[in-house]
Length: 103
Image (cartoon, rainbow, N blue to C red; front, side):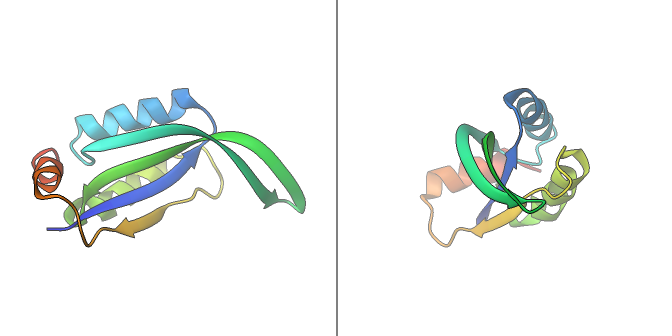
């Protein structure tokens, strides 16, 4: 079973921390890494420069659909980023932990 990383960005740490805790508790994701980043993007015909929080959700192929639905449902942005990275190579002990930590 290959793990999947789902990426999204959030406007503040409080929101992503709350969502991440719930998703780990529900065993939809094994882990969420959260990092503060600077983002430059176009929105409503303006160039925006803002601070955001990047979230890396680590889950399994089996849970990715449910995870994406939960992110979409709980996300505060009108157009949230929900990007998927499939991993073709990962150390076996970490893979075992991800699978064991999710439903």
